[in-house]
Length: 99
Image (cartoon, one colour):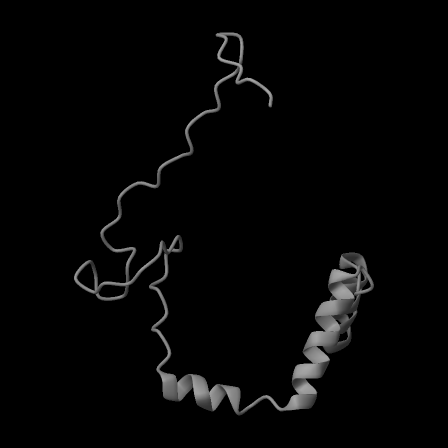
């Protein structure tokens, strides 16, 4: 076990910054609407989806879509995905071809 260094020479870590209070950050209708979390953007927080909306969105994906997404995510996590440079070149080429 390593003893704690309580000497005055040890640098003290600064406290993390505290977000300023903002009564409008919790939702579109102001502070009276209770939503959890911090919304750091200027735009209003998007409304929460109902269970019915979530279910209808889930119906848009089939098993093949799920397998493709999982394979793509695995490629990215394993470093075999498209590089940022290649992605940007593809986007820039598409923009030139359309314009």
